[in-house]
Image (cartoon, rainbow, N blue to C red; front, side, top):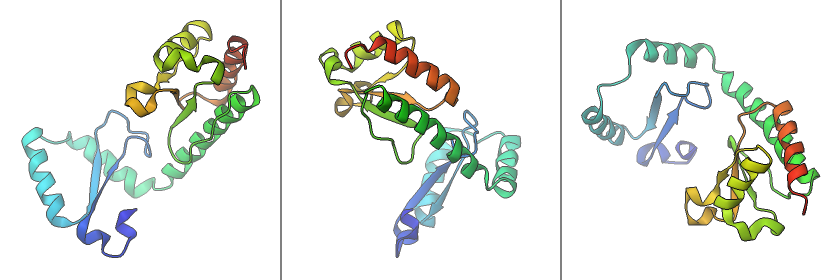
Length: 173
């Protein structure tokens, strides 16, 4: 965290969303730490944009922070296991990729024999032929071309099934 650096709390702010770490997707709950003047200015801007979060959701988020502080560690373990199942499986069938260090997404370079397709065509082909959905990298900007993004949202058994489908489809690996 930038707030751990000397003087960080004086010059920076950090926004922390409850979405992934506390499994509260869709709740739109977050908090901010750091420079109080910057936080006050951002709070003022936010007050012009909406009326705030429904109070029971705020209470649930507060209870979660106070009573379930270990939950993010459990979520991390789940995502690490899913990441390992995906990355190890793809590497085992010849689709080389580096495991991500801290995200719920894994970016895989399009295998060389299929690179000419580009990320949009390759992702479309993969979902049609292997029945495995990925996001074309170019959808995240020009630097994403040549990659597809996997979301680590399925359990290890479903991921193993996806790996088998990919192996049967990518016959040029």
